[in-house]
Image 1: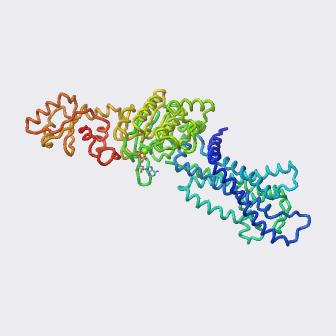
Image 2: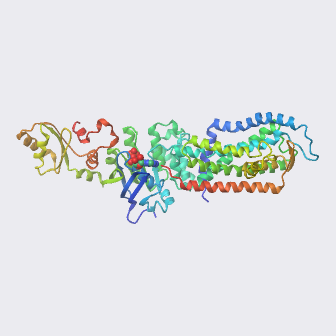
Image 3: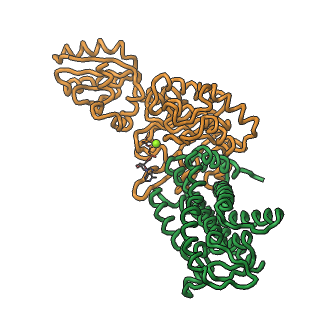
Length: 278
Length: 332
Ligand SMILES: Nc1ncnc2c1ncn2[C@@H]1O[C@H](COP(=O)(O)OP(=O)(O)OP(=O)(O)O)[C@@H](O)[C@H]1O
Ligand SMILES: [Mg+2]
């Protein structure tokens, strides 16, 4: 097997650990989100929902726990959407010419960037989970050690497939763009719909029909569902709404993410096939 | 299959390339033989880099055919990529990687085995005299060091063909000379070299054969001495009280091949040795009442060759130098 993508992976990780500030902010930022937004909102929501009757036999989780999954998902979305930027810089600084004129099949560039971005997302997700547990996110509540390990594994698989999809998309955008500013603008524009039509921060149950449709095709929703299923359980209530996830639901979510990643991979391959640098 | 049976490492036929309305390459054909150092000499915008980009598969071929190391660039780009090394015109180093990492990355791209990568890296660092800089990030290198690192990188995989796009641009004279030495050295070891330059002396010193290229076309190809000989053996530059009359008279001399009028004087291309002709010629002109104010005898240089074939000097040499290179030489 040609393992050329490992070369791309190696270089990208080298840069990741070399830029200490980048490494540091990429870990601290999601933690801050959880700390400020999470704690502030959870006080509000928990006060509002305190009066709602609890559903007998169904465990109720606080808002902080509810959006813990959302913060992991959002962080993965942002990191992955920006993960391809390095390719744009490489292209603009001429560095891409070295890679493109080498025998490395171009598809390996995408795979390498995908894998390094995925690794970064794993690190971030793990840090958020640890930090979350510290400040009162009740993930893996009452799980045995092996249940916890299986759940963490499940979360990382979901995070991994999701991040790959968005990294491929990001790579395809990067290689098609001329300037970092343009890329920044496109990505900012893209994040909005993904972000607001998902169940990351609030329930989608009360959305109008169109938004609900959007939310069901939104990969972010599927990632959040997967994380909640593994981290909180298959039947819980939060903000007065009962969440039931059957294994089937989760399988569908997983397949949706796989499909998304596959489509993005094809798009990236197509864009890379056309690229010329001078 | 490394090389064509014909012994040519590069074969280009009727290559054309346009960027929108700009015809950067306008029907170029040439061959580079195995083991040769071949140069493209031409001014800015002549189309040199465009040809390199096509030959190195970075630009899609639009029209014509091109084969590198026996492989068609359009049909077998991967095979071409395996056989070549490139030193790009612009710096293409990752500023935040160290010298060693830069070479390591390159070796990995070409699937070199680990042990060989390590050995080759140390070998090359010695060759380009960067031994002490192995763990320095490239942004902390001087311009010349960066260029040497890029040349080392081009050599990393022992390519069959090395493309060098203006390899010594912006380097001090010592460094240029040292780089020429590396180039000859690796050429002796068997690497075919294609280089572009707009330095006459570089083309002259380094290449087995030179193509002068301008406006996307090859104007003439040949060995450096052949190109110079086409201008005649010697050149005489003279200024006199009546240049026009002098030209009339000198045209009758059998050993004067061609006369070019310059703003203040005349350039004579001689078919024979000028040292004997010069006294006779001066005597003759003085005898007919034409006073000679300046005279200079020289061997043709690549500058003269270039001016002769393109009708002008390299465009980028600065306005005050725009008068003919021969005049410049005449004042030396
Ligand atoms: N990517 C591009 N897009 C549009 N035009 C281009 C591009 N690359 C080159 N050109 C044009 O093609 C022509 C040839 O350019 P090229 O870079 O091949 O010249 P060159 O001989 O390498 O010059 P130099 O000595 O300055 O490097 C120029 O007119 C240039 O403006
Ligand atoms: Mg050029």
